[in-house]
Length: 214
Ligand SMILES: Nc1ncnc2c1ncn2[C@@H]1O[C@H](COP(=O)(O)OP(=O)(O)OP(=O)(O)O)[C@@H](O)[C@H]1O
Ligand SMILES: Nc1nc2c(ncn2[C@@H]2O[C@H](COP(=O)(O)O)[C@@H](O)[C@H]2O)c(=O)[nH]1
Image 1 (cartoon, helix red, strand yellow):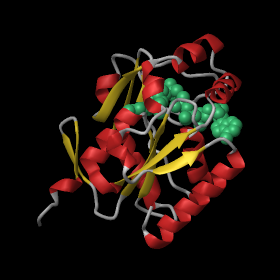
Image 2 (cartoon, helix red, strand yellow):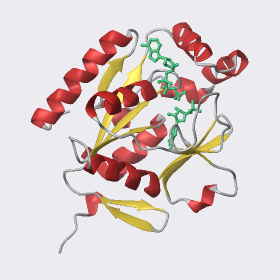
Image 3 (cartoon, rainbow, N blue to C red):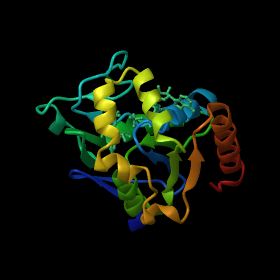
Image 4 (cartoon, rainbow, N blue to C red):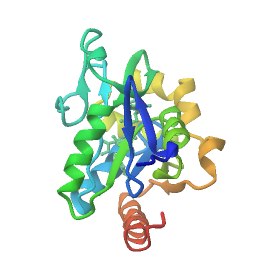
């Protein structure tokens, strides 16, 4: 049996063969833009499972291990096989073979098998674009007003001092702009108004599910 090299994804020493029809909706953008909210909506309304990623940061109030993230220590980090990993705000974040496999398994039981979502920064999104090519479907989430975004993060329970630090960081500034590597065929979602965002997501996902065009 021949295997198309485009569909192979390397995670540590594990080679993943992505079936041709599989798609990963890679939801990217700045911290607080609403990426996780969009992923949650895709799960609740359309049954598209999200890949749970890993981090070494402490859980925020209300966050649950295995639901929001796999919360790792420096020791447990290496128990996973990472497809990509980054350092952000002094902590490690990464998406693993194990996390993707769990999402594919859930997806096979859903109404739309073969579609999963993943929330990452723009560096992670570029890695997926480069490794799985058009099987990574890029959604770039942004807002028009950073002050409004800061208020949302504070309302989420983030420490106001950390919000200021984070939104002044070079990582944040970078993720506010769509990188050239992704700009060509990304779907832009301006998440200023949640009702409108839901309508945009409905249009985009329905078009995809009927035409396989996204
Ligand atoms: N359109 C919106 N209007 C008001 N609040 C919103 C809107 N979209 C998301 N939020 C809220 O803003 C906060 C940040 O959203 P969310 O966690 O989805 O962002 P994110 O991009 O995933 O952030 P991070 O990358 O830091 O995890 C959440 O509390 C969410 O409920
Ligand atoms: N490249 C990756 N980025 C990730 C991953 N998991 C989360 N993230 C992004 O990190 C920042 C900070 O997240 P927060 O939850 O501490 O606010 C944010 O942009 C996330 O989307 C990952 O596995 N890879």
